[in-house]
Image (cartoon, rainbow, N blue to C red; front, side, top):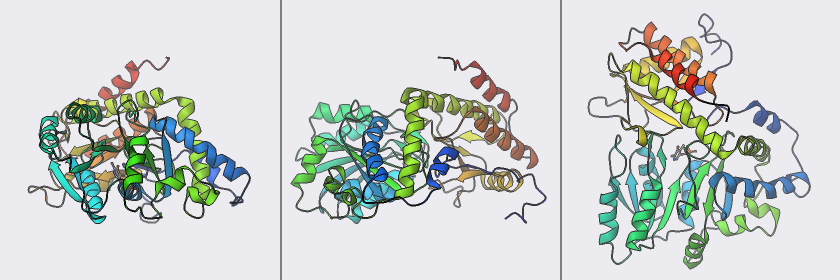
Length: 408
Ligand SMILES: *Cc1c(COP(=O)(O)O)cnc(C)c1O
């Protein structure tokens, strides 16, 4: 790689601006760079006990948490394995590829996934979801799988509106939220929003390498787990959340070094404060939208989600005429050391290979200068490749950041 880039401007610290894995703080990496600890007693064991309440603070829940050695897909399967029996039905309102992925996971454990596909540019149609739940008078739907931020489309859905529908209809289905992209970036309040089960993973807003999945669950979900005829031993959240012996936290050997990294990441997040973490992501996202809208004034550059209230603060999906999305990604990576996200699950009839779609990841350990660097890199790529675009994008983003009152 070094040889290939020897005559470009890519030397220096590379920047992976994709929606996970996210940029990791040096302090997290330093904490992981150490000799293996004793896994039977002492410091690691003490530290692990302390992680659980802090994870719950980030998820905004008073209830329980289980940690899995695995990625987001593992957390999906873990949540389903404790709540849904083979043959039961789950409802999946979808606004992107990740909702489809969770639905497929449900089918994999023998459930029937009823998908309501709302496309990739609009959020959920709550009225349509309500109609389906209303018609389910026999309460065959046992859970609603709700992806908070769908990382493929960058749509952020309204979890509270879904809770309100379930409450209005007095429907007993569990409300299960995928917060893998959103936790630690977009506001999410598990208890206040009435979420029964929330899942996330380590490598996005939590700023730790891929390898840990987290499932948060409340007493209603716990009751559901108890009523199942069986739960696979490995995915069972009960011993993980209430271990009698240390190894039960992880159903085996602890993910030692990930835990050290997670400890530091949680310290950083809680020291900044959840409200500030969310506000920082909101302002940085607004800078990205302002630049993108300016680029869109000339040429094909466009945000995938046109309504700002449906846009995530963690990831932004963008479009150019195909194949300019892929050309832009390749150019900024090769020439500037900046890697943008691919268009995932966003291929269309007019763009079967998805070469018009790309994404910015802006989750976790990102600040103003990084976002300006990202936008400056994209501006450079658009210029170098002669891709038509509107002017004033960098100024537009700068105005957003300059106007932000960061003294509070
Ligand atoms: C990243 C992501 C996943 C999948 O996580 P993996 O760690 O890749 O398995 C699922 N859902 C959402 C919303 C995501 O952003």
